[in-house]
Length: 314
Image (tube, rainbow, N blue to C red; front, top):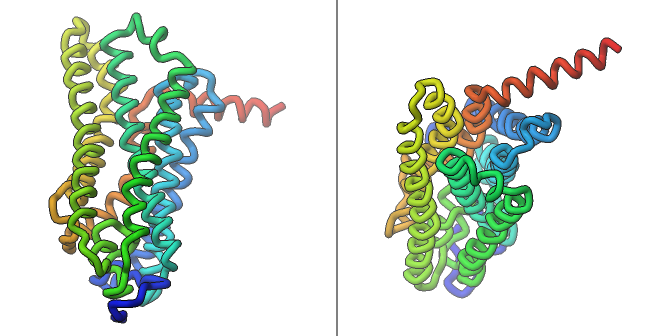
């Protein structure tokens, strides 16, 4: 549907995943199962942290924040993605589209900041263990968590506010499964070079700068761990940060591929696949990455089950 150059759109049409149509029903079932696992898996982490006193530490509080963000981040996109898999043409109202775009970037930006805070927390715990309790107090933990939300909201709101002011009169068909930055800019009937430049600069500053901070933190962490004399001590230190390092590597790899490039309008089948992995697969994997190899979490689960069984026996 092509609109005249003097009109604006009231709603958009999401094309979803316009390939492998014969497999869409299978994709829907798989995607729905993955979304349910994402909700349950990430919902489990804050619950077990609240229940078990041993997990009332800054690291697990930040992890709870991350798990909540994963639920929010996935929920902004996945339900609409599932709808595009079972319906040929899925519409979304203009304001709904802009709201989805806004919260997608707010939650995504907050996640990057939380991961950065988590790497700083591990740096203090491993490199400065004696000073750690005095620096990472309960109030500091709360303030840092709130700062990630405030910082992301301010930065992403300013970035997404540009999208609201652009006139969309070329078409109302979005070649994507959600209202992403690049596909939306392609529909604008005014010069978007400034918006593209600001988006690219924002991606460089937000993604690359936090990645640099994470990388520097882990350089210090790994160098400190290698200086630990005992093998058991090195193994224990590595176990507290390997999960976080895995998540950082996967997430930043996907984000750099999608957003950190000069021409954000360039879309390909591969970029669509990476976007699916970023919004569906990674949020589902995070709880498993953080819990399966985590001895503290497994011990807390066993303790919670034991307490529940003892209560039922009474």
